[in-house]
Length: 226
Ligand code: A5P
Image (tube, rainbow, N blue to C red; front, side, top):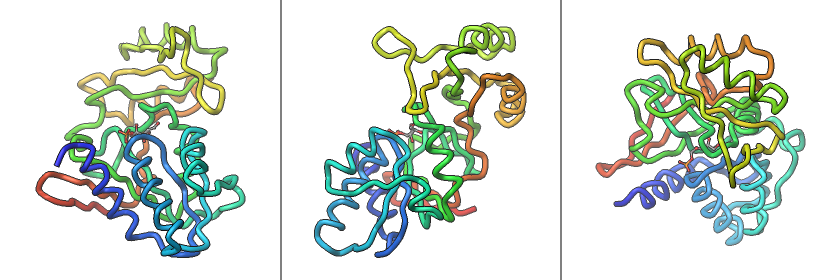
């Protein structure tokens, strides 16, 4: 199976946890999109009824709506029974890095409002140590330039996320600075020091939000539970 098929397999397995009448949180990214598509099929066929969804991004909302899934505000579907979302990195303790697609703030808000949060991913997302790639940090535009300098001084190798040559603006109207976790530090320590800086809104480190993970590997499904 190629990576795309693995994403579909993980999404299909997560769908088995959805029951009629549930309030759902829909994730963002290519893996979460597969879940939204499968969910739409179930709703359309009538196999699942009375599902109420909220979304972690404007993009997912667009996709869901285009497939006939009505999207409600977060408050309207709270408490959320189940959130399903992808991740960029997953470690053995079910800690995550998210946000390489830029939706980390709404994702964290929605997923902290969910009783269960199942991460769906293909095997490429499993890491020994979080920080194999960048950690996205959402910051206010007002602070962006000075935070870039401070993060540089902290040895975090900051890169401002761009789109079409301009700072990428998130759904919550912030910008994103991607940083590197220094080899000798744990991500949790780095996040504590990042959060001391006014203008840092949120980071893509999700230490305890996920309650379960479904990882599709070429050898079959691997499941994790907190
Ligand atoms: C969106 O901001 C991210 O947190 C995604 O959940 C994450 O990037 C995973 O995306 P893919 O499923 O596209 O890899």
